[in-house]
Length: 436
Image 1 (spheres, rainbow, N blue to C red):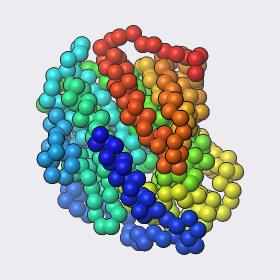
Image 2: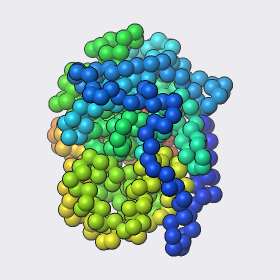
Image 3: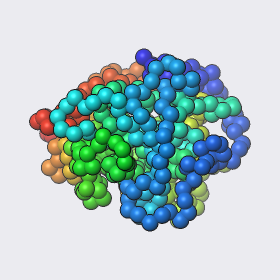
């Protein structure tokens, strides 16, 4: 119900502020520079420089974290104690970095077999501004500042359900959400490392009910589904110390170049700008080549979204077409260098996961297409992985509002949660390789 209210509010706001279809000029008026922690959070999110010696997953600092469903904290609660964490990780270029997140210690006991399990949770698209970091939003429930800087903590419904069932959770903010630098949106390696090191950090956090060698599962949907999938296939090489028992990857963006025609003209077309900003931030040697393909409107598009949360990006850029932002045919551009190689570097499915995986995708997903998600499952199956692929068959509905991307997260959430619980309880898997 709460998520439904949130979605309704976002869509209502989007309708109110949707741009004119034939406007000559970009009507957005956001002209402020990207900022970093210009508020009460700065003391925590500014990492020490240089980083203290240590290994990936080592804790840098921690503090208690207020957990609320909405700003007043009066309308219900998350049944857990929260700890905000900063930990060491590794970026896509192999450099050490600081990442923040939240650990949730449940009030309730774990009713299943063995020690309390840990879910490493990859959040879905939040935006690219520091204020969008999930570890901040759990303190606020709803974030707002003038005029359209709006963020809803839409992940809280699943988190509150999971901790009530006795799962411990650690949710990463990923690289650059809250901490210095730009968020490296949908970067395969950076997101995987942030997930894996979040699991390590939770296991090293003192005073929890976790067994340091206890079972771990990865969970995520959309951007989080891609992060969870990437973590699953890099766990063996990057974090063999984690006892991974399973991964749920919902609607994973497994092949980024396939997203362009789906995002074009949709409510979430701004995700393309997030991704291009991420590429420029991670691979600055290609910045000039990328920017040379942008029109002035395209350059303005990338500049503005880097300081926005997803609701603001929706209200200001929804239903825009991509072509006016580029000076070459966009469908051809993604096949040319350096775009082709840069996107291929982010493709998931090249390595075998070290534990069973459940993939969920809607056959008619209008944003993160079904085809690449199914191909991800087939690629893993070909490597001998234990894969269960679930197809959500909800028919197309209001495609440009990406309804069939958002709803399966809710419709099949219980199915996914039970699948993860079965992995923690040691039940047999039901792979369906060769059937999708």
